[in-house]
Amino acid sequence: MLTTRFLNDQLRETLSKRRSENGFELADVLRSGTENPDSNIGAYAGDASCYEVFSELFDQVIEAYHGYTPDQQHYEQFEPLAADSVGKLNLADPRIISTRIRVGRNIKDYPFPPSISHASRLTLEAKIATILNQLTVDQKGRYYSLSQMSDSEQRELTEQHYLFKKGDRFLESAGVNRDWPSGRGIFYTAEKKFLVWVNEEDHLRIISMQQGGAIATVYERLRQAVLTIGAELPFARNNRLGYLCSCPTNLGTAMRASVHIKLPRLGQSEELANICKSLNLSVRGIHGEHSESKDDIWDISNTQRLGISEIEVIKTLFQGVKSLLQEEDR
Ligand code: ADP
Ligand code: CIR
Image 1 (cartoon, protein in one colour):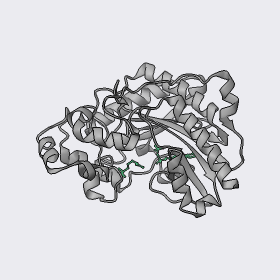
Image 2 (image 1 turned 180 degrees about the vertical axis):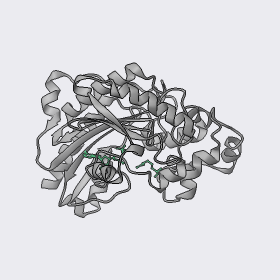
Image 3 (image 1 turned 45 degrees about the vertical axis):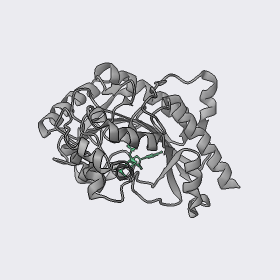
Image 4 (image 1 turned 120 degrees about the vertical axis):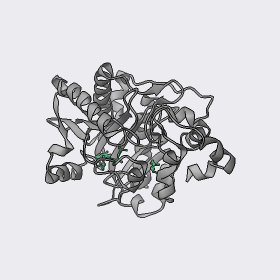
């Protein structure tokens, strides 16, 4: 676990005297890792100020995960793709089942899900739902509060990879499941290619997805959606760490670009994890983080999100997927 690697007695003592703007203490930051010793990281931020208040810890975790040092500046390049790279980035291999790109966003001045109060979460949900329900044309859809959805509706959407489930034990310990399911929900368009999760691990997870390997198409849809939503809501961000998220692995672009890909041969061996690591990619199971693979299908995505631009994120995925498919054939 990265937190225990970096937290010596002296640093623990120094940081335990501090409080974030919303009253988050070191013990709160560390709770998920303390209660789940098999955590990879083990820390969550309760609000934007945590990354400054506990910077001596977070900066080391961030450097180990993203390879990003405290003197670096994050740069944003969430721009349209050059016309000549669009066709190239749309992969057509039948082994690529689907493509999904999401960004996490939190709303400026609101505590993050690990520490937001029930009342503020409800206020935020109403504010976000109003904005989402007013979107038009390609972004036209409807917001559904979890409290108003039946269990079977929720289960069906989750099985189809559209909806989040109640947070696992890592998120439970982080405080993200408090008052579940109140104040959470999902927005989606008729085709379910543009979706927004509200008040899951971050206030917003803005998602673009579709069947097949059209990475460029999925990216451009997401870009437009983030622009539209960003014009209505101020996001928590700073120049050094980019967009600020509950989990330090999501800082920066807060972008996870993934494919569901069928790898019957590579998936049988330990090699898949090693090859992905060398390509700066992460491997997850078919139902996301901390889930298993099924029918040889894996979720492959960029590991680094900070100190890399949005365009570089999707190029990392594109190059990585091509290399994986070559390796599978070999
Ligand atoms: P996040 O993407 O927010 O980090 P998860 O890893 O929990 O969260 O994944 C969320 C959901 O998205 C899961 O149901 C997962 O199966 C689905 N998902 C992720 N990538 C893809 C993809 N390329 N195609 C279809 N569904 C996907
Ligand atoms: C952990 O520390 O393992 C969990 N809190 C999840 C961290 C983010 N995900 C990841 O590294 N794959």
